[in-house]
Length: 294
Image (cartoon, rainbow, N blue to C red):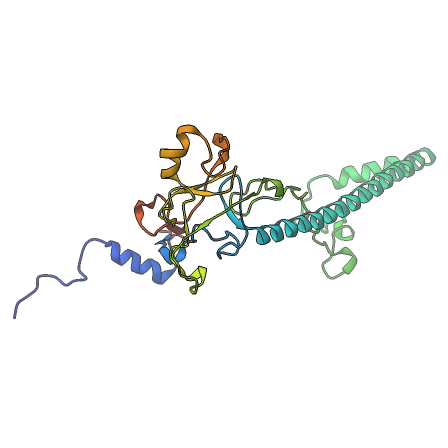
């Protein structure tokens, strides 16, 4: 029987595998995971519903939405903004009323103090001397030695119990923002998109069940997450970036309707990924957890 010099757990180095195992079991430290193809949205799916679009529209930043879903989102956001604005205006009116009442009370207090001083100046001088004595540093640690027992609030008396102020409502932003790019989104900025369906002769299989659903409007190349593509604003057709570079950009004319194109009329479609590292998309997800203190 062979004799081993050291056991498998007698290593002097805290290995990567041991560190990952301890991190996952303890819940401390940062966790990273690489997303697979099943976790990535398809290029022709809505960014809100994650389903193939029935009436696809695209934003100027290249994010695809179903028209019904993005309209519901815009309406919901406008209602929320109106509700928050109403709440903010109500709070503003309340604060202005309270401020006016405090100013009025301060003016009345000054008037009362002035009348009191003019009618009895001797008593006013005695009160000033009393305040000067109370403002001196007390010799005792007790707060009740200088007569503060009547001014300090008591937690057992309801009207003297300190209460927390309500949370101040901040003025909401009045612009609806895109849920993906967080940039201002307007209804007139949405562009209708036309996908060219593939001609495979299969009319029985549902569209969502097909792996290849659409092709380039010019070259008939199959579109997918691994194929970069763009939308032409003039026609709404989807073409591949390869077709765009080799054919369309030479004359800057839309081949489907012969309209002149400009750089702003070419909108790269924000796609998912094929799951491979060469897709050029970041597929890593990271969550920072609590760190162990030495």
